[in-house]
Amino acid sequence: MALRGTLIWTCTLAVWFSSASQDDSETCSLDAANLTAVVEEALQCGEALPWSGQQTAALLLSLSSLTHRLQQHQLKECQGAEPRNCPEPEVPENGGLACVTADNQRLCKPMCNHGYDFAFLRMSRLYDKCSEQTNYKWDTQYVGGNKLAVCNRQSLQIAGAKSAYFPKDQDCRTTKSVRQLQNNTLETFISEVKNKGMAGAAQHACLVCG
Ligand SMILES: *[C@@H]1O[C@H](CO)[C@@H](O)[C@H](O)[C@H]1NC(C)=O
Ligand SMILES: *[C@@H]1O[C@H](CO)[C@@H](O)[C@H](O)[C@H]1NC(C)=O
Picture 1 (cartoon, rainbow, N blue to C red):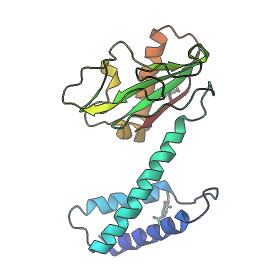
Picture 2 (picture 1 turned 30 degrees about the vertical axis):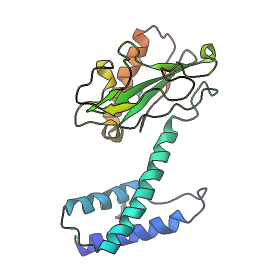
Picture 3 (picture 1 turned 45 degrees about the vertical axis):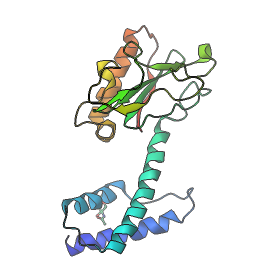
């Protein structure tokens, strides 16, 4: 990696470490685009990473903390939607949830990445609901909780409707990282909800990845 890149990388790490010790309520001025650029640059190195075992271990440590924090951060995107009495549904690993509010109901559609399938048949059960009618609980196939679905590794995807699977090479995170792809996924879900007879406007549409 070029010296410039290494310097930026080191500076970025310094910003990370100093911001990690700060109070969460302080705003962090770190620009996501800069950090992404540095990480991409490191990825360009391929196998030729010039770092010692110690540096590599330290990086792994901070990167996994950051990954965890980023994951928590992106989960917040769906929080606080109407109806507010509904608990947050669990987001399945190896997939995600597309959610929308319509007609005073919160509707969430579990989706699995390519190569993963639902544990239970849900072909005709495109989404799960939470509303006053359900006593603000999720009407899920899993009794008494906020788990809507799990995505297990499977070569065949047969348990769910076709639109409940992210395309090959376009998993939930890839979809979410490209505005147009996320928009397509949410618009598909909204039209499915409308086809099932929802009359009101779709609000609080969001996609979160597990
Ligand atoms: C960070 O990104 C901004 C634009 O997004 C750019 O102007 C700036 O030079 C970048 N900083 C570094 C250290 O690369
Ligand atoms: C998708 O994009 C269109 C056009 O920009 C916009 O009107 C619509 O609100 C978007 N849908 C969602 C769910 O963000």
